[in-house]
Image (cartoon, rainbow, N blue to C red; front, side):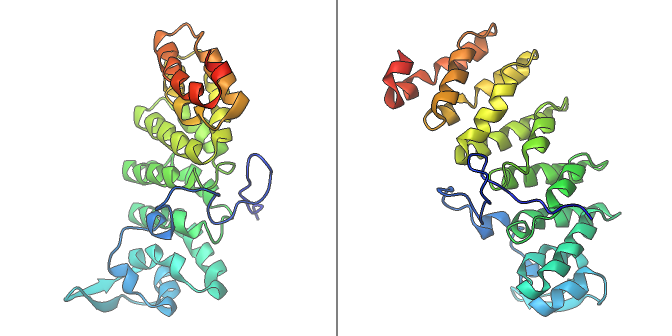
Length: 260
């Protein structure tokens, strides 16, 4: 059995709770959950049997309409199960992430961010696999998922981001840099970690994209961020230097001696 992943603060090594200190307003369970829908009407005792295919479809009345809810709906609702059933729900979610049907894998990816606040286990490893899925629609959902979980579990997403940032597919690379920017807002040290590697890359595109995140870490990244900015100001690529120069006004407010 794979060792359970524990999300840790990259600065202190301490376990990260439900959300990092100072997290953006609005980043709560609702923002991490699947889009609202009839699945929310499922009773807690109905979720697991339906998600595991042990019961038939359930008919409910919602918004004046009758809906037949099936396995996909139950997978979206797995984060609602009571704590006593959380381990079984985790197993169901892992199975769904590896399911043969793309729609099931997509539903599981929609649930992963909110459920990961209760159990991480190998969920991030499953996310890594789904980012390399054969189905375009599954990969697209996995990319959305990465942007949600990267700010919550930066250490757990470190290797995933490292790979995705260097992916030759444009959509994967763009998504990874968006995820890195979101993570850097919450954890400037995470941005510094990746940018320290990116500014040394030979590929211009990686350095250019990386330099666009310098503003995000400039005010709270400390001496390490200032070093990265100084390095980028000397880059041979003009767009890297231009992006780095845009941070000088921020540095002037934070540390005037560095800006000068």
